Image (cartoon, rainbow, N blue to C red; front, side, top):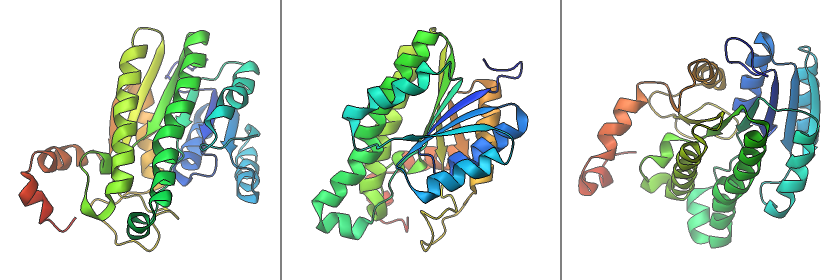
Length: 251
């Protein structure tokens, strides 16, 4: 169960090597979280992440999870929930892709879409049903400001995040009043391995800043969190720009 401050004692991370997810796990372990499940493709990186969190005092388990294999999600994630209640599910897997390559190779573009949207829909619904069955818990979905309006520079990634964002909002409405809380997190450019080598965007942030925003959002039971918060105003303006004007912006 969550503590008096609304923070989880047990955490399931979908995307167990995500730098944002691991920063969030570290922050929550420092507060109250004692049991962590890291779900991801088996790899040395996943085991290393688990070891680091164990060093902070948490009971950490790894789970073989593949976003691109929706047929396995029910069985794989069901085993986690069968071990006991999960207070927080953090859906943090995703694929940035390479826009130029993905335009040339549609199969690569489809992989981005299937990872970021189809896989998230499947895993999100499986976890939502389990959270609803136990009668409590939060589902935190890592979206992106890229989903607010498709940009020429990354419209394949952006469109997949737009779909994910709409799905998560709808899921939150569907679960309203059930005891399950859904929170959509919309970070801007985050300095991680995934964005290494890319030109840094204005208002860039860090995994630790996103983790701090997630914690605050959980305490407040927020439905939407922007990181940094000023992006809410920036994206509100960009979203309503005429298409011809937006097309000429260096974004």
